[in-house]
Each structure stands twice: as C-alpha cells, then as structure tokens.
Length: 133
Ligand code: MN
Image (cartoon, rainbow, N blue to C red; front, side, top):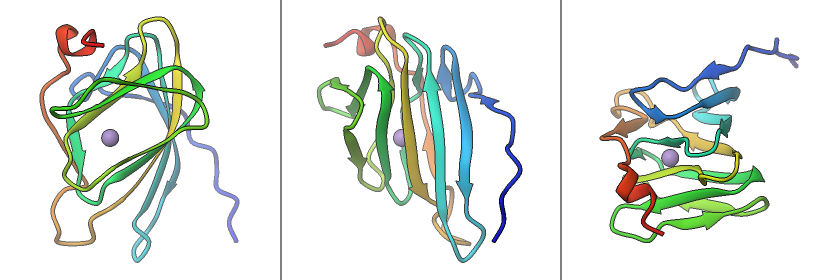
C-alpha cells in the first residue's frame, strides 16, 4: 500500500479550457491500470474546449451548478449528485454556469499503449454556443 504525496493543484491550460479551471489528479493508473480520476473545479463561465475521449468519460458533479453539451445536442444543466456518461469518441464540453462555480469528478481511461491519444481536443466553445440554453 502507498499513501501518495498530495500534488499541488494544476491550472487548466488556456488551449484546453476557457476561464479559470483547476484540477487535482486523484488517480493516474500505471499500466496495466488505465484509470484516470481528476477533481476539476470551474469558476463561473469557465468551461472546457470541445473534446472527446478515446474510451469515454464519466463525470460526477460534487458542487455547484454546471453545464454539459454533446455535439448537436442541447446544453443541459447538471447538479451535485448527477452522473454524466459520454461514450468513446463523442465530442462534448463541460463547465460551470455563468452564475455558479462547479466541481466534478472526471473519470476516464487511457486507451492502452499504441492505441492513440487519451483525448482529442478541438476548438473553444463560443459564447453563442455557451449561452444557447
Ligand atoms: Mn470530457
């Protein structure tokens, strides 16, 4: 057993996130584990860019009020206790509402060696997309 040293929080990079987003790595499994778990904290208006995950992703909201959208779908409000699953390869974004912070657990898996990138990242979510609700 290991009790791991606590790592400092990381600021989400501006290429991948708009606004103030900070994450803490809870688990980054070493092969053969492909587990990835982050706690992600979004300030009001902050959100990810459009992206998708090679093996899908589960989000679990722990605090605040957030928004999530799949490509071509509605912007949906998400609240503490809710769990959101995005299948492999489905383009989406997640973030806080304009009025509230939002914290979620993000759980996903690495694709395994030689199977390409964990996640693909695209363009930022425009204000018009963000406000379409
Ligand atoms: Mn995602």
